Length: 176
Image 1: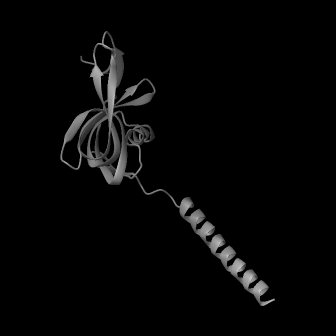
Image 2 (image 1 turned 90 degrees about the vertical axis):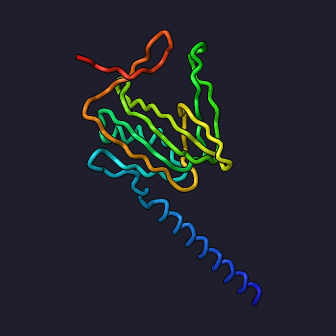
Image 3 (image 1 turned 135 degrees about the horizontal axis):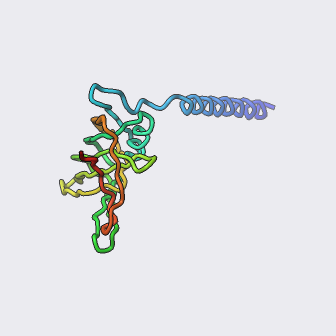
């Protein structure tokens, strides 16, 4: 009987602990994501966190805030960055991915392709040995720490269109 009471009490304690853990996880999961950007006098300041997809967040900001066009700069840690070097003969990017690097510089622009934002982003990444890699960014995910992006909004809507024969997505200017 003593053993049975001990087993019942131990099972109840474990059950209470399990319910507490599940409840706490549910509460934390339902908490609002931290703010990713704020308005500034010249545009926006975006702070992204570990795991965030940088290009997706910039595209979402452009849509949500209806940004006509913008330029941006940034710095921060990357879990993974993929650069692409454009092969003019093949008319495509040759990608190369680097992991756990620091983005020493990001620079880019926001324009539009018909209905969607078109992000053009270049950068320079360095590894722990201070080797530098750079070029056109195809993808970028934030690593440990954060990434800060300063977006300067322009008042004119700009568009990109694919131009031949290079098959390149080129910013269009409406000159008088």
